[in-house]
Image 1: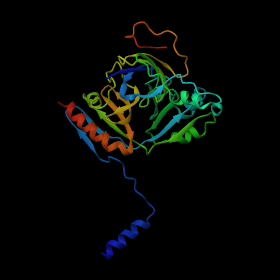
Image 2: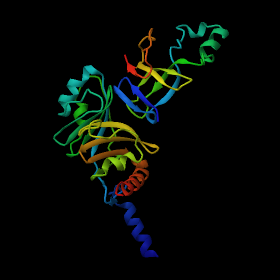
Image 3: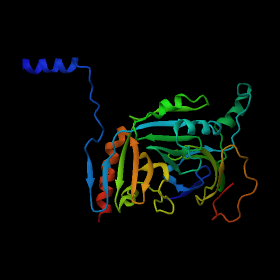
Image 4: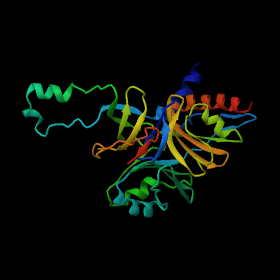
Length: 103
Length: 194
């Protein structure tokens, strides 16, 4: 079982307590009604789906119930780091991905 | 026949309604652990921002814990940290915490959930092993000391777990799941005894 660090509970918890909530840092336009169909499609449907590092939203649904962001490697399934919702995308990832750290 | 009908009418017209306790009278005792259904208690689900915590703590008579996985007990009342702005308050002394919160003018949301939850006491040397039958959390005393509490899962349902002593836990689950939880824990207790 994966252990995921919840930045609100400040410790690693078993993955069964968590739920994935899609890609993180997808900004909603302030003027959503004025968006062109193409731009809306990009915002609403198109996701990066990379092979490698992905920034995702996760929810500690059976714990503190809070949403937070996680950096995960889609190849190895390793969680590189987690940080609180609303915090900016980390500019630098920890070198040793074995050290799961919280900002 | 007529007698039975008359009896039914008399029962229907009486004003008293008996509340049937979920799991009433059920208990399991194995070599490893003992399961008991705890008596009904008053409970509230409390949500409040940081600024209201002091006023609510004063009104409730117990300091709302601010650290993850911690609880505070005073005068039969326990406040369990569930999230950064969420607590479960359990009162076993018969006083209503909802009424205490109603007097507080600071912003908060308190909802009575007394009848929503059923509490099961798990005790004995195999108590942690019993719960670990379906709960993946580390329940060693270093990771989950006495007084620690957490919302987590047991099998396929959500529970709130509170360690009341080194070898005793309080498991709070929703009433409609209580049969599942009790049966699951019974199996766990049986395994913990071996």
